[in-house]
Length: 588
Image 1 (cartoon, rainbow, N blue to C red):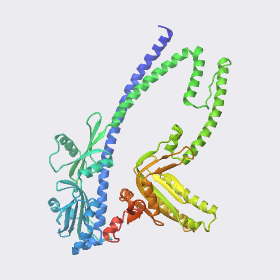
Image 2: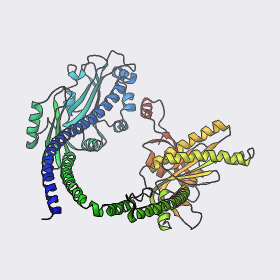
Image 3: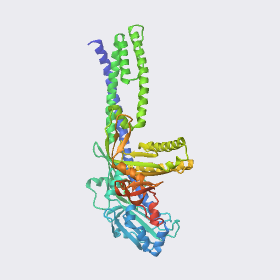
Image 4: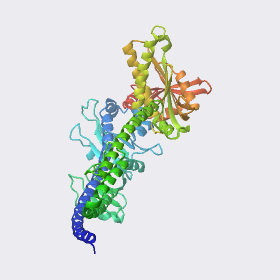
């Protein structure tokens, strides 16, 4: 056994013992810490589900309160006017409000109106008998401590778990006396439960306690929760199912505070697996430290012979890997190795200067190309020297034109005219950049922009709609500042296009296809200050924006086409206004 081997043995054995001791202690600490984190994370996930359900219940409560404290409802309880039901409780109202049960009860316990509604089949049904029995004058649901009081929570209605809110019927200014109660409910149907799972991004099941017996495997869970339930806190139970799955359970109370449903949430054991990974990393890092320390001891033996040359070689390799030419090698002494180090440093200095000049010129060229073409297309051109046209199935195109721009040229100098156009289009460019849209080109006083290319995006139609509305505001602002009669005419269409760069000189990224032609026709046939969209765009935006049906107009090359005016965002108060009859339902 030579000296190198002895040094390796005497250095490695103590380090291995220390490594095993540290690994054992640290592993135990990590296991306990990750176990606590896993429990806390599971409880937070259960609480998230409870908070989402509480949010849905709060939404129904706000809706019920709005309807209950309303002069029309207050008057209906007294006069029973059928117009109230016909105007406010149609199928459309139930579907838009996502309600399955509505009941109007007077102070004597008489149900003036009560019905169930099947949202899937779109049919009315009689008010469930189990609910009718709880709407008597002596029922706790009909008792309110004060005018601002209400009841809300889970209830078993017709064999289904239902979110129920009961509010006293008051005047619109929330004054009494109360003339009865308004009940609204939303059934926790499979689609609602699926929506709850999607919103929380969890795998969950809800087991009613008042129906058939729970599965045998859940009976001990229910017993444990009921035994340790605390009325003032959310009682939860977390149990590992296997190495990859963690199960969380909690009880949901009904309107009266009694257990009504068992929530079961299936959670991945990511924290547990991360703990196992951390333990492996700990072991490998300790082993690596041991080997590194041993290697250092061995290097000390060779210092007098190889350290300087090995150090110089390592420095050069490091500079080559990092590609950082600002670094320099360092060699001590006054001999051939020191002279070689100085020559290497001189060479690195010259390379650094050349590399800086090359980087500056390349940055200028790339920036110029990025100002002309989209980043993806510019990158493709720089890599392959060519760009292949691409086919896009869903793209929304906007054409805009400054109305009356020709007439401005009669009383503005060309320089002022171009400066005004530059200011307007620069503002449009800023909007396009903020909304991550692709400006295609400008032709005279016309502006073209698209969404959904060269990188596809789901909200291409929404982004263009935001752009169009913002362009109207920008034009109005310029009109107010300049005093010139500026108006903008906008046309929008959604469809299939082919986009790319053609030719070899003076590159321009452009679009082709029938969808582009139709978008141009939408702008040409639009009116000053208006945004005209096709039916294809309307179908993608009708749930989020407010439209007015323009009708069928003749489009060159396409014949009659149905078009719409985009008026703005769909106001949240629109439905309430329609319900009260403040406005007529002219939107489509």
